[in-house]
Length: 279
Image (cartoon, rainbow, N blue to C red; front, top):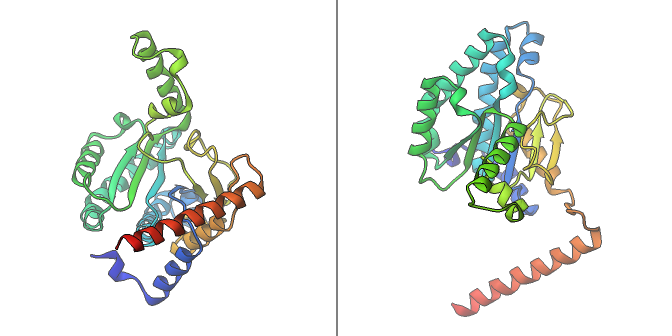
């Protein structure tokens, strides 16, 4: 099932409109919050909210792929989530297993490359096996990089990186003076991902819940008041447009950013002219 062929005329127009606005965020991270509260308000058990949330996962993955977002990271299950009632945790693991079994063919067909971050050894063996198979099967794909954060915690990953650096210092592989931001980042599980440009959180909560603490240092945050099962591609488009209308200064002032953007545009124009002349 080719996702690009599934697009409606209206959807194509919206995606083209977004593309004309400028630079898309390269890496979008999502805290998929509100499944349980959505279910309770519907008079349903909490697990029904998680099941409904899977439809949002499918739609947002497709929309990111179609729009041209290169990296999408979904906060699917945190280390802290293990504290939830056993029945809910078991239900979530079953849903994850079902998703991997039912969606891997379509994800692979649409050139999606799957990654994972987190303490994967804590997951059920069958889920670990399916994740490994999915990662291996899609390893050569060059489209959307879909990362599932499972049994993940930003603090856990930072502490883990410090421990690994300490071991390498003890073994004489590096010295303390060698530890720069770049070197430190290379020890994180996200070392193969760019920093998050845009973090989306649903359900209206104003916190990042221990997600990508290092990687979101200069990321933009967008809060949606919708619960995750209600969040669909039109809501994603609003978040992308909101991001693209912001000025990202990285500690500089506006006039510096304007000048740098003008220089970049001029360089891009000159490069295009050079390519034309070469032909």
